[in-house]
Amino acid sequence: MPFFEHMGLRLHYIDDAPSEPVATKPSLLFIHGAGASHSLWTLQLKHFRQTYRVIAIDLSGRAESQAKEENPEIETQFARELASLIQHLSLDNFVLIGHSMGGGVAMSYVLQDGIRMPRALVLVSTSSDLDMRKRGPGVAKEAIEINLFLLQSALKRVKSPEYEMKRAGAKMSLTNPWIMQRDLSACDTFDISDRLGKITIPAFVIIGEHDDLIPPSVAKQLEVSLPRADIAV
Figure (cartoon, rainbow, N blue to C red):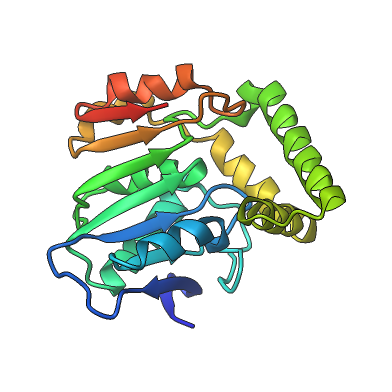
C-alpha cells in the first residue's frame, strides 16, 4: 500500500500498471470528487491498467490518507497534495483525470507555477465554479436518485458494478459525513472562471446528458472558456 508525504501528512495512492507497459503511453492519474476516494475509479482502473499505468490519489482525510485539522481549500491544499504526488513519482508523461471536485483540483494544479505539466486534462462532470449552494435542487435530486437506485437494486438483488460503486460512495458519506461537509465547503469557495484562459493544454470535457449536479449547459462553459477544449455529452 503506497504512501507519500505532504506537509507532514501521510497520504495514500494507488499505482498499477500492465506487466509490459508501453513507455510512450502516458500514465493516467485519477482524482476523485467530494466525499469520495480512489474507489470511485474502480471500474476505470480495472479497464485502463491493462494497457496504461494508472494512478489514483486519496486526497487528505479519506481512505488511508491523514487529514488536516482545519478545512482545506481546493487550490491551496488539494492541488498541492496532487503536486506532491506527481513530484514523488517523478511523472513527466501523464494525463490528469478529475471528477467533480477532482476536476477543480486538476485545473488548479495546472495553474500553479513550477509544476510538471500534464499532456492533457480530462474533466468529468465538473465546472470552474463549484459553489454547490448555486445547485441546491440538483444536489437533492441526485441524492434521491442514487438512493432510489440502490433500493431498487437491493430489492431485485442485482449487484452490478454501478451498484457496488454507488453503495461504496453512500457508505463512505454516512460513515464520515464530515468529509463530505468539508469537501463541499471547499467547493463553495472555488471559482477560477476568470483564469481558464491560462490553461493552454488540451482538455476533454465529459458530461452526462441528464446530469443534475453539473448540467451540460454549465459544462459547456468550460469548452468555450478553455482555449483547447473538446466536449462529449
